[in-house]
Image (cartoon, rainbow, N blue to C red):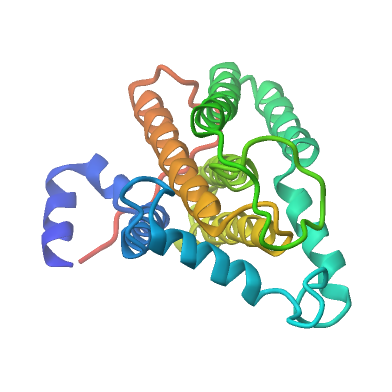
Length: 251
């Protein structure tokens, strides 16, 4: 786009902020907000159309003759449980610890602290929202796994969006190839999306729980990523996270 190219010449840092993977993250967030408004979720979940949407989608993924079974081949049930575990506390904790150890070994102590703050902050936001709204779990279909916490918003959806986008954003700092960076962010978004979808398949969350979890998670992850980027540009966060500058394109 000529306007963006012209602006990037005048403001070099703006060029970094307009990289494709950043635009993908922003675009995904706005797409989620669009769907949120599309089902008229004006009062969070106390809207008839939102409730109708929730119930319709929950029923549509179940076998009409046997609601305890998911629609499709028999292996779908096991696959859904496997994928949803990617947003569970055990898996996410393991991934976060692995990444933090890597950052510590790279002597990027402040960056490791920022990863910890990002994930713990997301967990705190999720718990506060759950305790505030206290929405009951769906009862229109049998749940395929036991969950006891409040339903709104989906913690798996929110925390997987935060964790995988944060990790993906860190990985993009290691890459000079724009296609690889786009691929990394796309995979992070895909994994977060799949985790949220499985929560609906399992019958433990309403679709609107998952949608709001995605929105809050994407927003928090994007906010923390831009905050980290700003600190790195100012030298507050260590630059020995292997960041690689892109060569200037000749126009």
